[in-house]
Image 1: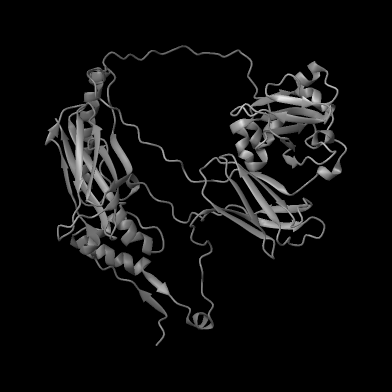
Image 2: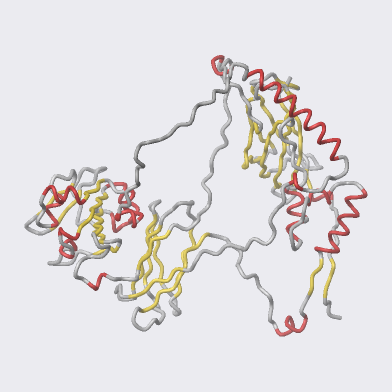
Length: 489
C-alpha cells in the first residue's frame, strides 16, 4: 500500500524541555541598585548541563512577557507546518481548549500529500533555494565575442574589509566564492581567461531571498481571548500608575509653542563627485581635484603628483613610488586604476600614459593601511584616476566588461546592548530619570560545562516587578524556556 497523504499529530513530550535554577543575591532591590543573578543548570540525575541561552528583562508595568511566540512553539510546532500560525504558543498551553484547538490546527495545517508515481520515477521535489551554510558570491564568465563559457578562467575579488579571494571557473564558466562578510562590505570582482587576458564578460548572479508568504500579525490585532478583558484592565491601570510616577520627574518641564520659522538660506546641494562611482575611492588617503590640476598648470600626468606627501616622482624612468606611511620606506610601483579598471605596469610602458591631463577629473592616492582593500596588488600603494568622461580618452580597448563593484547584503554586526551603570555615588544621584522598559538583554548567554552562568545589571527608578525570560537550548538538545521575576521596592 502506497500512502497518498498523511495527517500529522502533535505529541507533547515533556522530556523535550529542560529547567534550571535561577537565583539573585537578594530577595528584592532598591531603584538603581545592582542586581546579580546566577543560573545553575543540572539534569534529573544532578549532573551539570551546558547550553546557550538568551535573556531579556523587561518592566511588567510596560511590557508583558510574550507567550504567543516563543522558542518552544517555533521549534516544535510552527517550523514543521505550512502556512502562518497565529499565536502558536497558545496551542501548547495545558488546558482543554488549547488541546482541542491544537487538534483543529493539525487538521488544517498538518496534511502532507505524496505524488507516488513521480517518486517511483525518481523525480523528487527539491527546495527552490538550498540550505544556506555560508554567504556566497557567484556568477559566470563568458567570452565577449561569441558569448561562450570561459573554462579555467581566473576570478579574483577584493573587499573593503581587506580580504582577497581567488578561484577558477569550471567547464561551464561558473564560479563561486563561499565567504562570510558583514553588511555594508564592498567587493571589487575581476575576471580573466586562463591566459590572463581581460577580454571576457563577467555576469554576477543576483542575490536570492525567499519570498514573503505569510506576514506575522501584531498581537494587539488578534481576537480577544479568554480573560483578555480582565488582563487588559489591569495593564491599563498599571500603565497609568507608571505614567503618574514619571510625571513626578517631569514637573519642571514646560511646553513652549514657537512661532512659525521660515528658513531663507540657500539649500546646500550635495556635490555629485564622479570619483564616488567607484566605492574604493571613498577610503583614499589623498584626493587631487580638477581645480588643483588646473591651478598647477600640469602638462604631464606626472606633474599632478608634485608636492603630494609620500609620493616620489622619477622623471627619468617615468615612474612613481609611494612611501608607506607605516614603514616610512619607498615601495615598488603602485597599482594604477583608471575608471575602476586596474592597469599593469609593463617594461617601457606606464599606465599613466593612457590618459592626458585634460581628461583627468580626480586622482585618489592610497598608501599604507588604506591600500589593504586591494589585497596583495595594493602592497605598493594605489593610484586611482577618474576621468572626466568616465573612460580614458581615445582608447576603445578600455571599454571592458570583466569587472564589477557590488555591495551585497551581509550578516549583521553584533552590537552590545546598552545598559547604564550606577556603580558610583555620582551616577546614583544623577537627576536624569531612568525610564527604561527593557532593563537587560543578552542573546548569547553561555552556560559553561559546570552548569553555571551569571550576569549583572542595574534597576531603573521605579518600584515594579521585572520579568526575566530565558530561551535557548542545552547541549544535549533540550529546549529551554523559563520565566522568572525580580521585585523592585
